[in-house]
Amino acid sequence: MFIRRANADDVNDFVRVYERAYKGLERYAYTKRRDIRSYFKWLRRRDPDGMFVAVIDEPVGFIACDTNWYSSFEGKEVGEIHELFVSPEWQGKGIGGTLLNIGLNHARERERDIAELWVGRENFKARRFYEKRGFKFAEIWGEWVRMIKMLH
Image 1 (cartoon, rainbow, N blue to C red):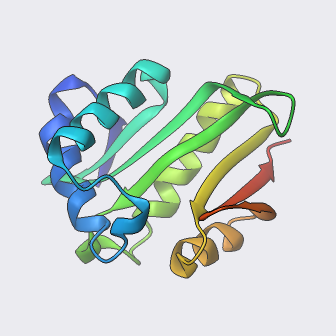
Image 2: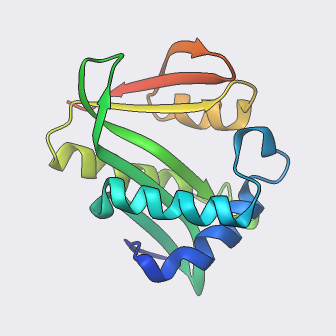
């Protein structure tokens, strides 16, 4: 496996892996390919240096860490993890954790002292994943749970 920064040419792989990763979790995801493509482009515009892809022969996972995100909850810019997903057949093999560490290091390099993310309220697998990596429950807002991690 190697990890590199995502680029505009990764859009089709992003859509393919996103659709597979969110199977069964559609209530928390975009379901139309057009919307997923737009989401990819939005993520790249937000912080092009904070989007990474894990590759094993082909792309198998992505993370988008936005260090330009202003958190109204924290009252400052944070390292916002907008997206992290891994193709189902590669889950549980350390890829998600490796991508998360790279995203958090990107936030640290940009001098962010808090990482923030939102996860589906009933996406217990993802919530446990983040809790094991030091994220703490912050609050619930509708269908979403906000989690934070101190980066210093």
